[in-house]
Structure formats: structure tokens, C-alpha cells
Image 1 (tube, helix red, strand yellow):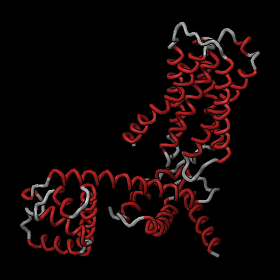
Image 2 (tube, helix red, strand yellow):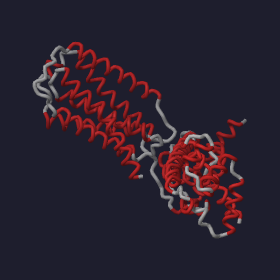
Image 3 (cartoon, helix red, strand yellow):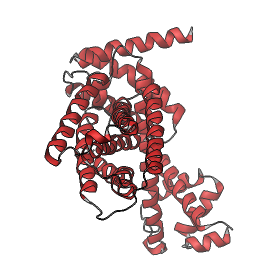
Image 4 (cartoon, each protein chain N blue to C red):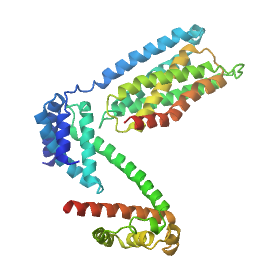
Length: 189
Length: 210
């Protein structure tokens, strides 16, 4: 039953993309709507980070790769290949940015120069405190010690009996979580 | 960007596209272009003078056949892999068999060859294999760039391997030197080293372009 449903879905995608290859914009519009719904399901299973960005990147890739699709072949293996490619690209970018964040942390150990200490806006500080309280206990401690109490990474690693790398990684993860919490709250407003 | 804006932009950008040529057709085109390059090298450098006596040796024919099938089976793999969601088990298997056969032939050649004297290093072989590899790589890479390689490290490694083995085929036709030191350092080693050295450069360039 599930197989036949998947085949019907694949056929639908294949027909629509086939028509889009010849420049039919109405079929392409329907194809993009279906693709977006399908990608939401696929991406949710694969990652929890920046899902919307990833979906948009995949849709752009599908657009650029549409000439490589052979409508006589199943659609989903073709799509999954692009999804996995974009997903690994996103992971690479995540680790690259992670390194940049770590570099930033290492160069802003002085609490006088941290963004949190320079905040004057009370609302923003409240938002940050709210977001901080949602972090896991260890990450919260590390961010507080690093950014509010002015401890260095080395000092934190000694106090918490962790390696410096583990402190850096925890801090980086905490910043990513903080960023997504604050972005989510901003969207809700 | 909002998803609706993205959809609108993609629809506006929609132009009719001609579906990618069949992989077999692409391979035939590659084969014709490569044969033309090999003929060009054979004319400009000259076919080895001892070709008639060399062809008495069964290993010469065997190596020639292997060196002909190997690059094209690897190229077929690369062309298939450049299409999202596709792979070819048969050409993978054939490439592996050919690679093993070539390794076997190399060792047999080395075992039979007692001529270890190398009066001159003959660097021209190394230069030929490098120029040929660059030319063959450009041809295959331009064909691959028309697709959408999702595993591009592996795809471009295969491209370089195919090109360097075509370089070895060219040398096999033009170089008469049978000294195993020469064969090892000027024929086989560059064929293995060129893909390893060139791959990071190729990947760097691709990341810069895309």
C-alpha cells in the first residue's frame, strides 16, 4: 500500500518536472509546492538545525540540476542525492562557522569587550537572560563564566575539570542554541 | 528569504532545458576526443620505433588493451556519478578488474625486465604524461560540469585517474624505453602521483568557481 502511494507520488513529481524541463511554469509551480512539502518531511528526519535554510538551498539546487533528471527513472533517489549533498555542505559550513566562533571567543576573553557586558538595552538583556535559562546546565554555566564573570577558557576548564576543547565546543553549541532561541522569539514578535 | 519569494524567483528563472545526453553518448564523445588527442601526440612525438618487435610480446598487447579499457571504464563511472542518484556497479567492477590487471602486468613487466640501466632519465616522458593528463582532464571535466556532481571529490578523483591512465596509454604508444627504473619513475609514478597532487587543486578551484 505504502509502496504504491510512493510510486504515485514519484510519478507525479516525474511528470511535473518533465513538463518543467520544457518550460511549463504552471507545472513547475505545482512541482515546487509539492517539493516544499516533501522536503519539510525529509529534512525534519535528517536535521534539526536551520531546516528552513536547508530546504531553500535544496530547492535552489533542484532548480539548477533539473536538466540532469531523466523522467523515465524514479524521482526520489535523484532528490535524496541532492538532499544529502546539501546536508553535508551545511555540516561543513556549520563546522567552519563553529571554528570562527571559537576564534571569536578566544579573542574576546576580556569581559570589557564582550557584547553582553556592553548591553545597555534592558529588553535585550532580559531576552538574553530568558534564552540563557533555556540552555542545558553545563552550557549555561560556561557562557555565564565566560561572558559575564570574565573567566578565561583555561580557567573554566580547570574549574569544571574539562578540556579546553570541550569548553570551546560547549560554548559554541550554546551560542548556536542562543541564536536560534532569540531568532525564534523575534519571529513570534 | 521567504519561501514564497523563493518559489516566485525560481518560476521567473525557469527556462526550457534540454535533458542531459545519455551517458553512453557522452562516453562515445569522450572516446573520440581522447583518440584524437592520442593520435595528435603520436604524430607530434612519434610512435615508438620498436613497435613491430614490441608487439611480438603478448604482454605489450595485454597492457595496451587494459590501458584502453581502464580509462574509459573509470570515465564512465565518473560520468554516471555526476548525475544525482546514479551509480554503475558494472563499470565499478570493470574498473577494479582492469586496475588489478594493470598492476599484475606492471609487476610481470618488472619481473621479466632485467634492463635496469638508465643512462639518461628522459624527463620528456614525465612531461608528456602530465600534458596529456591535463588535456584529458579538461575534456572530461568539461563534460562532467554539464551534469550536477553531488559526490564531487570522488567524481573528480575518477576524472583524474581516467586522465592519467590515458596519459599512460599515450606513453605506451610513443616511448620505446624498457628499463624498469625508467618505467617506474617516468611512467607509472606520475600516473599515480598526478591525481593525488592535482585533486586538492581541482577541488579548490571548483569551490572557488561554484
